[in-house]
Image 1 (cartoon, rainbow over the protein chains, first blue to last red):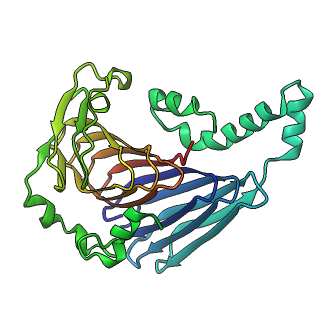
Image 2 (tube, rainbow over the protein chains, first blue to last red):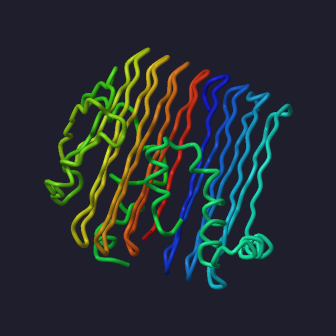
Image 3 (cartoon, rainbow over the protein chains, first blue to last red):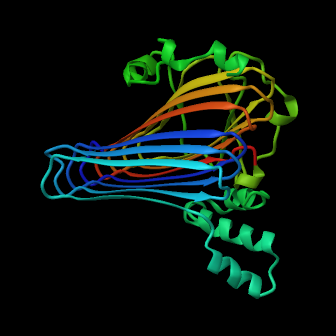
Length: 155
Length: 189
């Protein structure tokens, strides 16, 4: 972030299957004041897949009033999948709003039960929950692109 | 390790060193000339990329009306060249860029500089698709979004299950610029 008042949104959705490994490294560098960066990286893992997210927000001393956020969310669809998350902050300014977070979990059984209790088959219910997990990223896409991706059986 | 990965290990190649910004020096791109993108309703960037020929005719002739482009202006970049795509000041550009990786154990690589000049807007959609096993892809992109400019950048990696893919993206956001970047790694989906 080199200019005052810049506004950057970074989103990622990764689907890892089989023995795939996805390694993501991000660096949000704030050098100017009053800039905003918002990062959300989401991963869906099944089989033996592995993901690594290592992110850093770095705020220089002159970058006052920075607003920076970083979040990594992982959805594990298999007991053998592995997600590593390493969010980080390095802040040299004293008037900023910076935060980071990471989540890792499986499909919510209560949500799955709710859908099944409404007569939705298990596979379809799981698909709906996975689709819901993706929506936060996909919602920002153009409609034609989103429709293309929504057709995929994985989602 | 696939054969194509053995041919290409970024950290061992000075030309493709991804561990620093040295290889992404702006002057390196500008020497190659630039492609101006302005006031296009829709634009397709396509061609042969990488070390191997990928000129599958039907892939390169895909209709782009699905992406809202009434007019499609075609650009072809030379193989193994740097791209320098510039959206001039106070104009609006739109690029749909599709890369197909069609051969087994092949290596596809490119580097691009995407500049959005002051008060310009650029919508960029890039798709990288590999359908063959053992392929390796490496891309490095640097985006400079000037004061008051806007960039909406979407990168979709649609990869075969054992493909190896490197994407290095650097974004420079200048004063009051607005950037929205989305990366989708769709695995073998």
